[in-house]
Image (cartoon, rainbow, N blue to C red; front, side):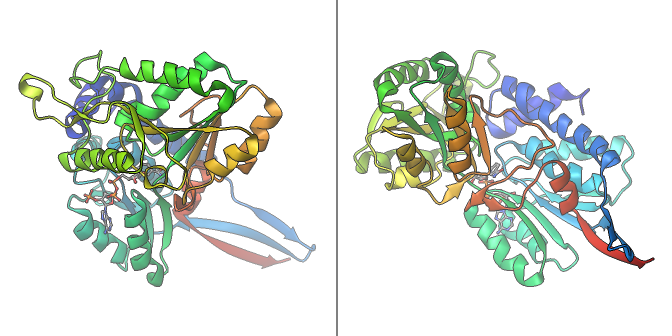
Length: 405
Ligand code: NDP
């Protein structure tokens, strides 16, 4: 796969609309890292043994769970596909894996590479087809005892409804409405640069993007002016152009959904500080699904714009005064996937990180990943954890063996 990196990056961009350079920088290297990491992690996995009151030895025998079902979304097609498939294969499972039908190409290319490299037939079975048909059939299939799913919260609930009465193991990585909390004492320049990225990378279509920017009152005006200026300077353009910061959104339906959210924000009284509209490119790209990055202010925490996942290049700004208020705002949605905290105060960083209801917290950074750490959300952002040992354990069944001495 590594030798074919150009082919994969171009396929990912054509399927998804993202800039080719982004697929080169993020999607493809991270997909390679997933495969490498789990291929070596399994060599170092440990099992537990206990001497029980001097009477017995208890040990845990972890065996592959069987056929693993993996269902992944369209936003980071190969990266999230390999994030599931790699630990399942490493744990010794055979796999039935379904990429999103919106972006199936890189998973198909991966199947070609696997066949060329001699992966035995039947080990990795990549199935193509629409979610409500093929994904639903996987969730309901009695011979698939575990489903690892990444996608929208509503789809996750549907899968859980089908799979729970069948007592399947479930890992659900779902949507988010992630807060970015900016305190007055932060490193302003570093925060600004990273917050532009955490807002609009991949056209805002990363589950970990910060979509609600909470800014302490003392910095609010300065932040708003600088952030809007940087956002306006982002170049929306041809995904093949290395100078494009944003490419196209994934589909016409998704663009319409995101633009619809801008209309909702306006009807709720939100002020559009920049963006909010489609970008019409010329020539072969005319009619493409491009959108200007959008910044909105003036909305309270309970309005739809600050409650619902938009999953596009749209962020809101909200001011706060105290640390307690920042936490109340941060925790005011049904989601709990990721949060970003910007402060130089070490104690506050730890306090707020503990208080924020979120599975992943970044302090003074964003999207730094250590594949050994657990990954996942709380509340409606999901159940179960992926990454590291958690993923390898998910795809195994633990058996306790107690041997009398
Ligand atoms: P969807 O939930 O629409 O789809 C995800 C996957 O599920 C696709 O492969 C889809 O197939 C399939 N699917 C759809 N309906 C069913 C069903 N009834 N039964 C089984 N499978 C089904 O999500 P999107 O593809 O729109 O992805 C965006 C969402 O994913 C956002 O909410 C985002 O936050 C979330 N996400 C979460 C991440 C996390 O780590 N928590 C990471 C990345 C994204 P098809 O598309 O072929 O119809």
